[in-house]
Length: 342
Image 1 (cartoon, helix red, strand yellow):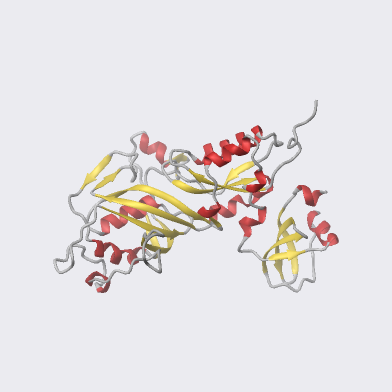
Image 2: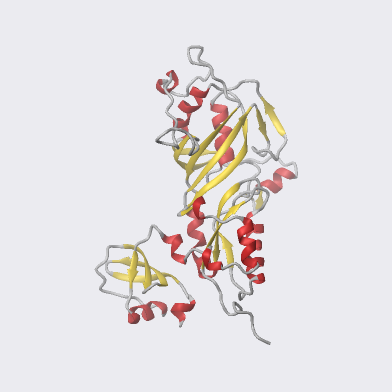
């Protein structure tokens, strides 16, 4: 019996999935594994580079083969999100899935929203949602919350690199990410008063924002705190991740495109190379002897390069992540791709 054409191939690289709403990150990994099986590939290790809640959509990097060794770097990478805050109701989950726990008839003026965002930029202290995957005494917070327990979360430091009002590409504005708002709120010391009678009262039932955030940031908590700072309450009704580390939504494929791979569509048209997850690390070209030494875990000395992390390769083949200190390179993570092994 003739083996399937892909049966000995273990792909290495990244599939960037445009995850639809309703699909969990673990389910997405399972879908990729299923597609690879259907396409006849050899059993391949698969993992994702950062959880995306089922109610969220957007960029979910999925690592295949040797790229799974870099999945941890994706967990530490910054992310960019678009999200909509609906004012007037706060839920226990801080999104549309939960029960309403507080209501307010107050709606913030649009100018107040633009002005308050600067108070949530930079390093901030954030209280994670009770419905989160964080563990409390060895048990997930959301399991405790669903069991009716009073969950006490601990505030933690996160970084909001950028936060602005959303503008889509169709808007007639040179900077589509930032809306310029001028109001008395912008010069108010401390927390602005969104109900200053001297300000224009174009009230907002909801607002869509764009946030570039550090790892560990909860957008649901950010939305809750912004609403409260505006004198009302709110919850997230829309959440889309547009970038995760080096991966942007322009590189993402749909679930339909993924399924076509299982039906025979070429994987290579959607698979990004392993080094796509290392765009912030300089490359270091090795000769065959040095590459062999690195693959054996030996130290390489006498390098003229600056101290730091390097992506070592032999021609176009990934070899290892190396850390150079004082001209000496040590292996941080080796890659056993088929081309290098041969």
